[in-house]
Amino acid sequence: MKKGFTLIEILVVIAILSIIAVVVFVALNPAQRFSDARDSRRVNDVNSILTAVHECIVDSGGDMATCVGAFTSGNTYEVVTGATATGCDDVCTGATGDTSCLVLDTTLGSYLKSIPTDPSGVASGHTEYSISIDANNLVTVAACSAEGTPIEASR
Image (cartoon, rainbow, N blue to C red):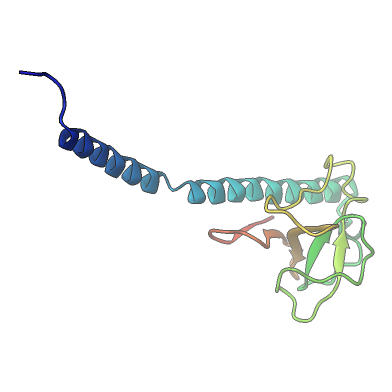
């Protein structure tokens, strides 16, 4: 009698291994892992921008205008780099019809090596991060392109 595996036995083992591989791949969900990684970077970027704004406010003796310019309370502005203060689109929908951009790379240049940009890629000069200040001078920085739950931080 010859020893070995029959073709049917080999096919059954391959089928079982294939099913296990599919189940493991679905359980790991690599697309979700990449999305979570990008959102994690967005959380860090939001906190970096917010910390830089507050360090600037403290260094300027509480003068918020030195750090964020002519900011109108209640409006949301997109944080941009190297652009003029008007004429770019407000990526976030916080302010209806608002087309102002907030150029922070000059005022926050000594607090950040560079203004963070969204990890998904952005148009030139845009960051996909927004900043707003309410009537009580509470600064909120948000990620406009968050893939999971909304990402924002306030101080």
